[in-house]
Amino acid sequence: MTAEIISIGDELLIGQVVNTNASWLAQQLHALGISIHRVLAISDNPDEIRTALDDAFSRSDLILMTGGLGPTRDDITKHALCEYFGVGLVIHEPTLAWLRKFFASRGWQLNETNRKQAEVPANCEPIPNHNGTAPGMWFEKNGKIMISMPGVPFEMEAMMENHILPRISSRNDSHYVAHQTIQTYGAGESYLMELIRDWEDALPANFRLAYLPQPGMVRLRISAYGKSRESAMEQIDRQIEALQGIIPEIIFGYDQDTLEEVVGKLLRQNNKTLSTAESCTGGYLAHLVTSVPGSSDYYFGSVIAYDNKIKHDLLGVSDESLRNFGAVSQQVVREMAEAARKRFGTDFALATSGVAGPAGGTPEKPVGLVWIALATPEITLTSRSMFGEHRGRNIRRSALEALNMLRLYLLKDL
Image (cartoon, rainbow, N blue to C red; front, side):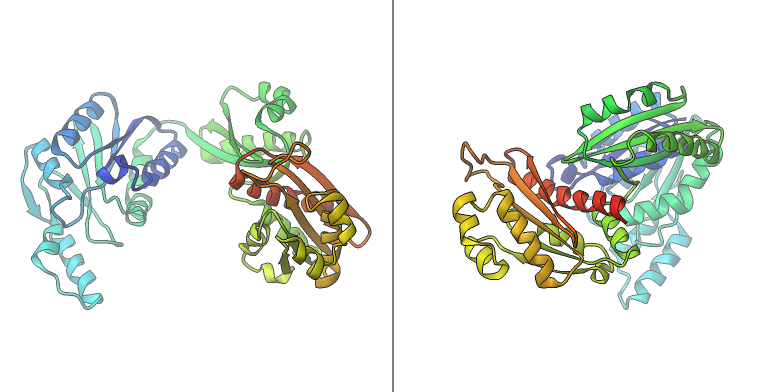
């Protein structure tokens, strides 16, 4: 089965709204082994809708359309579909009953505008929408399927999961596909490719591997096609086990895992605590740590020592170190981490100091230079990194580098 996704809305074309619906729909179809040939965004215009449908019906088995099904005058999809299929609107009584119930439960009056949401093209099969007022619509033409859904994401997603995907799956006799995303940190895309080249070359013919880089990270999405999703997943598990033997320290998690979650889990499992002292990251490291629910179990607090006076007065960084080496130095970041660990009474402390940019760099200390320290009960570790000239990326990469330093120490020491 082949598919196309058509997203309707001027807001998509002017960049006012990001088209997350298309991305989500593509993931769901791909998981069923359905090939997506085209993703298209078009304006709220009947001619555009008609042209897009003609093209889609000429080459695809399944067409998913979102947007333009609201009650206001700018929502023209339903009327455009009536013109396209040469039919009129009819009242769908189950939808009208749902609208009465929906509005009554909220103490609202069902007016004539909202009542029109129960009108659907005569040749469609309405799809229930229990999260909103606009039903979906299932059309069939020459053995092909076209489905129109609301553009509101949580309405569309529930409609797909509860009603549409099960029906599509039962009519699709193609293979199944399973995915696993492997989260890595510490190796750039090209270097990582070299490390795992032999493993990648040996993947079976029914496998696909994609490199998805982010600042400081690379996600590896491995996909396998099989007779069932279960058999495909079993094949993936075997390949991941082999990969873990090649890059054990670079892999930090899977699917939606984040470094902050992984580090938090390691701290909690081993009953250890953490504090931070931040200069160039300005609290972003603390933000990542505390974004994890339950982080109060292991995280005590932070000193954001942006100014040298704060480094000296609150963390006790020596005037000599600041004068002789500067704030961005191994000596200063070491003192920051050690002072934070003692001040907060934690097992570990992380500290950051660097030149985030875009200004402030010198030939000796250019923009992107960052020093990071990890203070432990036994030793203080430091690292020097050069990240680049983009301020936002430098801040994020500094925080991630600090978390990864702690992750590796925990894995080795505990």
